[in-house]
Amino acid sequence: MSFPVLADVLRPSDRVPARLYDASLVAGFSLLIALSAQVSIPLPFTPVPVTLQTFAVVLSGALLGSRRGAITVLLYLAEGFAGLPVFSLGRAGIAHLFGPTGGYLVGFVAAAWLTGFLVERRLAGSVPGALIVLLLGYLAPYVSGVAWLGVSVGLPRAFALGFLPFLAGDALKVAASLGALSGASIVGSRAADRKRA
Figure: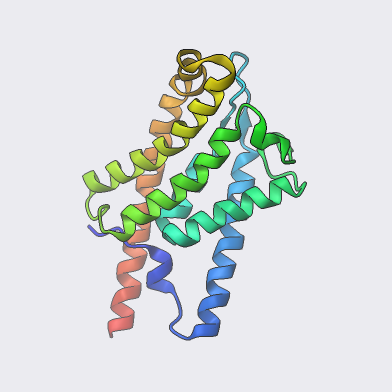
């Protein structure tokens, strides 16, 4: 089974429609990330809430590719820093970049880019390959997130507060992402067949 960058398969060939198509995808997926951030469950023992953001971020990279995926996340962050209530629990403002979850926000850009890059390189061309790509995408925000949280609470405590509590939820998100990629594979294959016909 092949897991293509779905946005590339469906992209119009003419320049102007293609640019409009790209802009629409970036705007639409930034809205998806903003909406997924509102599905947020604060945990009493950690400043990092459980959200659906990582699901939307990784999916953006996988379906849009590295460039559009990273731009999508950057647009989402710009919206939040400009004051739109797109961060978890309807929060906004540049202060979030310097708060305990700031490292995760930066890591979202890396997650979308990395996932898209690996899908573009056809490393998600099988179910085991797709699982590895998704796992790397989901792990990416933790690198900067735990490191940034560790500045204020120390790395061992940051690991306990900002990584371990989220493993079970991320396992479910990986499974859901794999299902979404499987659906994208079917849509992409049919679209490619139509273009060849």
